[in-house]
Length: 111
Length: 114
Image (tube, rainbow over all chains, first blue to last red; front, side, top):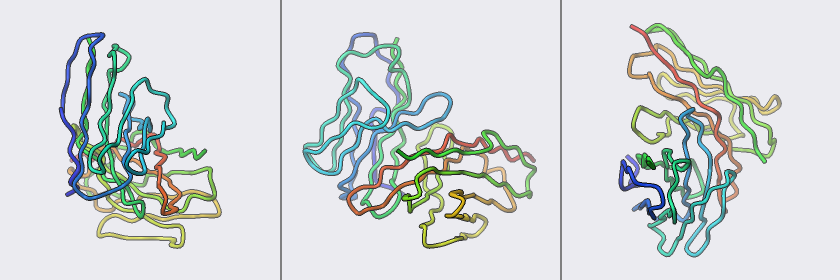
C-alpha cells in the first residue's frame, strides 16, 4: 500500500473561493505529480515537481498553481474556483525508477 | 511528446474468460510501460509494469507483452473474476533517473459478468 495521502476526499465550494488541495507522501520520493481526471476517465498531467523548489507545468494547461517547499508535501491551489474546475484531482509520487504511486484523489465540485 | 492510444474503451467478458487490452505509443524512446487499475472512488493502482528490454512479464493471472518494433503493448488477464471489473490504464514513460512523466492511455472499462 502506497503512503500518499490527499485531503479532502470531497469538496463542494462556491464560485470565486480560494481552495488548496493537500497532498503528502511519506516515502521520501523526490518526484511528485498532479493529474486531473475528467468524467471520460482520461488522466491529464497538470503539474509536476522533481524536487524541493522545483515545479513545472504539465501537458494540460491549468489555472491552478503548486508549490514544493518540503519533499513530502505538494499542495495545489486555485485562487478563484470556477465551475469549469469541477473535476477529480489525483496526486502521485515516484522515486524515478519505476511507476508512480497515486493517492485516493480529491473530487472537487464548484457550484 | 508521447501519445498513447488504448483500445477498447469498454470490454465486457464472462467470468472465467480472458480479457485483452491493447495500447500503442508514439515515442520510440519510451522505455517503461506500467499498467494501472482504478476502482470506483479510488486512485489508480499499479498492477504490473514492463521495461523495454523485456518482451513479456507475467504475474499470476496478469501478463503484459511488449513489441518495441511495432510500438505496442498489451495487458492480458486470464480467468477473469468479478473483482477484476474496473478501469484499466496503460502508460508510457522514459525513465532517465531524472524523472518519469507518465503519458496515459484513455482507459478501458472492464466489466466481468457472472
